[in-house]
Length: 613
Ligand code: FRU
Image 1 (spheres, rainbow, N blue to C red):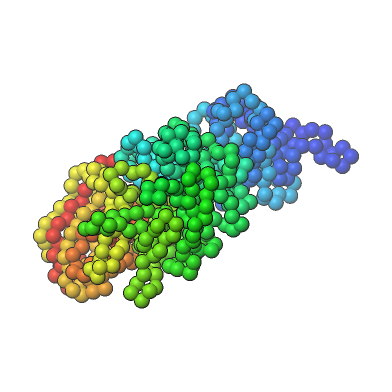
Image 2 (cartoon, helix red, strand yellow; image 1 turned 90 degrees about the horizontal axis):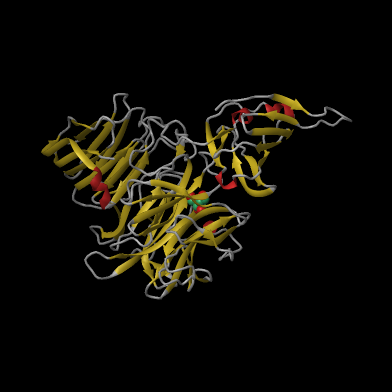
């Protein structure tokens, strides 16, 4: 874009001791007026689709920007406007305001001494109008090839997922104005196969009641809410001064939502969030589970119409892992294998206090009668603590509603609040996990657990087999197998270990970076060590060893290991144990070595697939 800088136009100076404003004509079509050390007005005089705002991440303080449209505050956004260096730009969409006066009233919070200091910030010069915003991948090394990511900016929890007419809808906590948490709204992507995602326009934006925190969606074919038989209903937390629960509905298959004028639909006098509702067939009404975050319990409500809710009960006080806040609940029924019975599963995402620090997902298996959830207990009457994933990077897991064929697919946010904002990517921050199917299984002692089975769609990605082996002995000298050059692959390996055996699988690259996974047949555990996996020093919470029980007793292990550019998901024995961990290798891992301590393990099959993505 042609830049015309006109320099500073000073108004009447120092008359009677008062300084007038300092005006700067910045890029074409933008007028910048500095009103004081912390206050600047930016007027858009040109006619373009976007105003690009320069961001610098090091500053902790966001500028508060009131967007004035024809003199009225349209919305307030918070942006880390660049001061000394621009890390990246974010687009502010001007298309809804075509032909109107758009002024940004900006309050910065950076303790400048004078208006002169303020005008030196690089952001004023760097604001430009544009008709395009380039979202092509700028993270050469680490943007995943087959996991969902936002086109740019920050993402945390998956929200409001539903399936309708062959399309999987995924909404998510999104900051469109930076790659750190802020300005929460619901971003939106769609897929017909749970693997390839198409970005859609943002679905629900902050309003007078606050920003849009996590929640759920469901179809309402009986039109209980009165928004139409074809309506999709979303419930979410309005996060203003306090947290309340609000409703929005869509009559165009989840593309756009209308916020219900009667909001909020649930208010409490304590912090509660992330409403997750479902139609309870047996009782013929809606149930909703809500995280009573600081109380570390879940509240259960019912409603005939999604608008009027009755509190039925609470679950969890003093039970399970209690270290962190309870968030993002889910409650669903699963078939009990080999019977025509079923059990209910309650997911409770907690942060901190996960099994390896920070975020984690605990779950309870029990019974639900439409009003009260009762957890199964250990023989001694205590409630067991169970974890859905034994890695560090799977959080805010919730399921799709209205999925076909009795499926209960879930997806998680593949990060951890301990370091999510510090991981070494900037254009986008965070990906989702791969989709997984929730299924119950009984371990060798008959105890029930929830498996996270890789969704069947994942097998369709399998391409060329790059390495294979059958019926070999895994000795003390490592067997080596090549991974595809780009490191993007699925490893499917089955082995049988004797008692007291240690089987080590190591992924490595020529740089000496490695991930070491160990199966211990004595203790029936699998560990995952990423301490030397690549870039690990952005947080002292990142280099870690995670470890999972394997739930078998006989040393028979199958592993499906999905490697993408910055993540490894290990599914053991059809999802009976799972570890999801981020990694940031400087070059892809291209080698797998397998060895066993006493040299007696039998490798039954190994296939390493490149993936067609
Ligand atoms: C979980 C969470 C939710 C909340 C959302 C805000 O990661 O804290 O409880 O709704 O993130 O973005």
